[in-house]
Length: 302
Image (cartoon, rainbow, N blue to C red; front, side):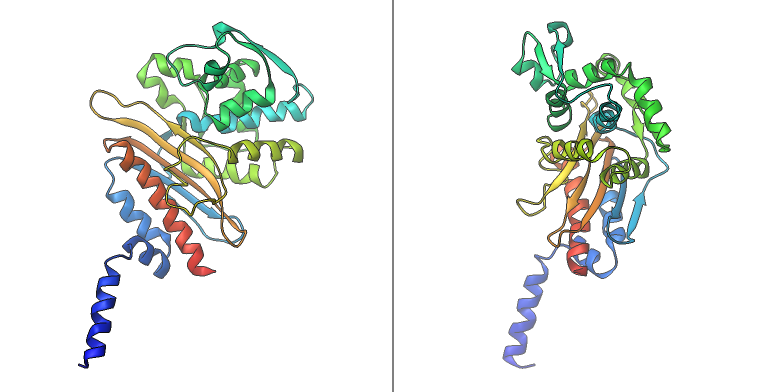
């Protein structure tokens, strides 16, 4: 063996230590094996659904299970609200009276922090608080505006999407730990709802443009879908997060969204991390790693 060849082999050996095996697997096979390895390393149940919007690649993992949604359900809620806008029953510009009694304490609510005594707030702003900032008080106000969770559930079912259950408000979930499990989705069901919405199958163009604007403006969960993607990557997404009980169990760490690739194409990804005993950084890392595997798969194809 020549001296130069020996140096080259040593260099390649060292370089290989810095190449993620997940990336390598994604490039050589498809994301499926790499994602399966990520799931197997997690101390929880992971649900995944992925589809390329411009190609035929798709996959699911654990799609037979029901995953508690938490604030992910604010996405179908927003769809239902905007459907009423399209029907002329509501307007994005209309001012709605939010009272102090609507602004419950001890819940995540940037809306309450901004309007501690309530006020006249436009529907467009309420949707922004609810979706982009994941506001719980704004969520429940919109549920009341539509006549309750049952009407939102009926709307989603009438779209022909099965495998999603919207049963309880944020206030109801906060009062009784088991209630959170009544709001659930199968990964493929949320993927289908999201992709059909993105393709404009449910709403008018103006309403759809508004919906995806506030999804792109989501400020929660920066370490999830967006966590390992290049800075500036356009991601329209909705997170969902539960509390953690005294046994260290976290029922939901979720993110669902549409990712724009450097070539202008897109993929949709749903990741539900359920009933996990991992810490928050690890749970969010699972979502980031799965998304990055898909991202690298598409970059390798381009």
